[in-house]
Image 1 (cartoon, one colour):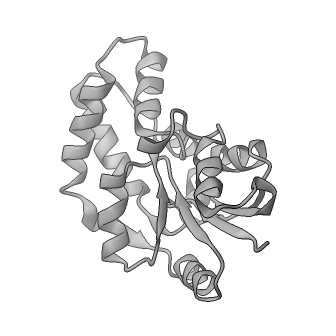
Image 2 (cartoon, helix red, strand yellow; image 1 turned 135 degrees about the vertical axis):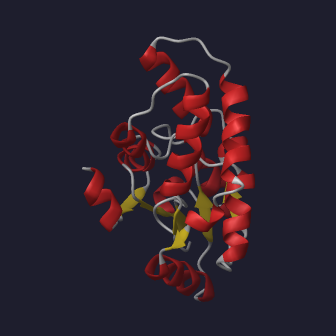
Length: 190
């Protein structure tokens, strides 16, 4: 049976972190919740709701996570120009797909955040597993296990391409092989 490849989205195929940080920062600031840039980047891979809940808990304030998440999505719509492609990984994605390998995207982001970017950069993805498809984001393996299931591959026959600590931990917890991608931006936040 062929190997299935699962790509994280944010930080692997595209650099959306400036968009996400800008939108989350503003939405959380409006709710009176401070956000730490380094911590936000280290938690990449968590779902948006998990990120918001973390910063609310960390600050010791009780806020409506869903309302902040909706506001973040409204703000993000105006900042898609901040997203840049990561050409080497998009080319790898295309090459694997063209060679007949099953390829999927598994991301803690939502489909409304992913789909416009996929279209903008013409990423030929058939399988997208997002925060709407699972209960728990990374470091839990749920996103990757669902992607493996949709590709009809056992976890041991899957390779994850990931850029975050939480994502690597999730791949390992799911019994998958993992390649870690380091971007120049990630080195700046460490």
